[in-house]
Image (cartoon, rainbow, N blue to C red; front, side, top):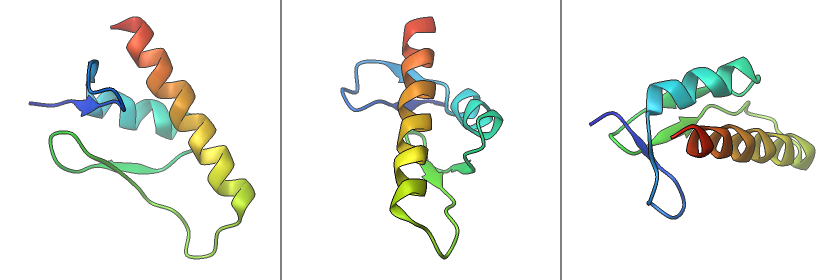
Length: 68
């Protein structure tokens, strides 16, 4: 199985597509287990970076769910 489960676990997404889309938006992630995408943050990170990363993650996963 090659998918990422969203918060509701109702919409299985293709994790490799999600990782590729996140990278396009500047967020580095790694496909780990069947339903895991790991973030690769810098060692020094600010709150604004975390907020930006969560915004990218929400947008990309939302776009993937709408396309499914």
